Image 1: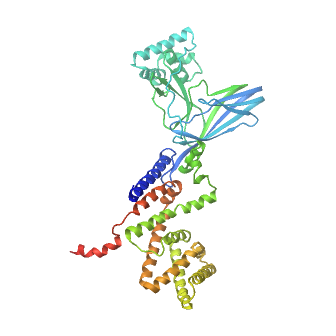
Image 2: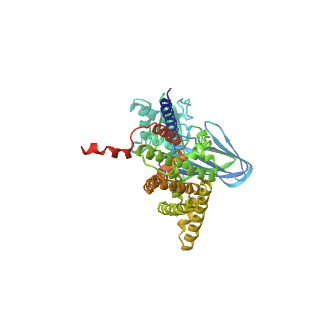
Image 3: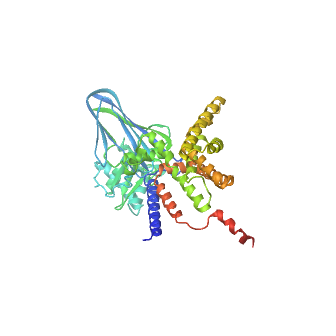
Length: 508
């Protein structure tokens, strides 16, 4: 393959890899493309209260699982004086135990969830339907229940419509006399539990969903109960009180199926209440927490795994390729001449620390003073190494003098003069002096002005919030920049600055 073909092959390969990793982090790991994106994070507290009966106590609580709309970021179990363990895999349950307890007891379970799934989240409930068991009803109660089932079946065409009609008969303005009688006989049973018993009587697989509504600053909320049936192919959830199909908006499923939400052995008067608090948190922080909890290698072996000091260093270093790309574009496509190849990038980095106006003023002052001193040193017939060293020392003296003088005048911005690269400035002064002697002051102005223009443009891009966010959070973009620079390196056409030679064609 020819060198040109190899260049384009590598350029395409680097670009695809860089874009592919970026898309993966955005689509799968939920890294934000914009710097100020936020995600809603909910803090939920489950408070378990009961009266211990002066003996051994065992408390068993069903725990939520990751689901399509929400991902679990963190969880905390408060159990002072209790032993604790988490049991189960498909349906996790927290178990608190204590040898002896008496009186009022309170246990806490806290978790944080974020809107949007984490990697590996369970996106759908199991498709297999549970076995239907007959409810334990007496003869009289079963006759009333059978009447409700028959009426709903006559008004429906399949299991889904049957469930909707049955729930309408059990609640609301269309409640039937059989339903009212059934509520009286089954005192204490919730509408959801009674609906499950009736569905079992109709030989329809069903189970209960327990959860809570996510509303900010909500305290002492009782668990909300929904039901869902299986029609042989998929699950269909319903609100048992309104017969509304589907999962309500802002509803967090705590338990799907299972026998009970809370079991307390060795205690009485047990109850569970939920409190909810919502916060808007940086989308990047949430994505990092999700990725670390799932042990994603792309995050574990990334800049985020470094100490904070090193991360701050790389945050600046990752901006250098942006400046290099600007230099390549202006030198190859525009044809702008600069003093040194990548000196404008270093000057732009200094501008970031000093601010633009202050940095330009400092740079022009240093170069002007250095050129004047360099013109005098040239008359002493010094060797180049000694002359360059003398210029370097002179630059350091000037920088120290400017800093002290500005401090006494109360101009704090000039104190950041130390961020300018002394070696580069000294070499620039030497190079411009040689160009002045060989090509005249016009060429010095062209190259110096070109360097300043490129440095200012690079500074504008390197201080852009979006670019700074993308380069730091998506360092894979470096591969895209590399591919683009490789392609630009093959350009051999006219530069924009050369078009003035052909302006007579436009006039004609």
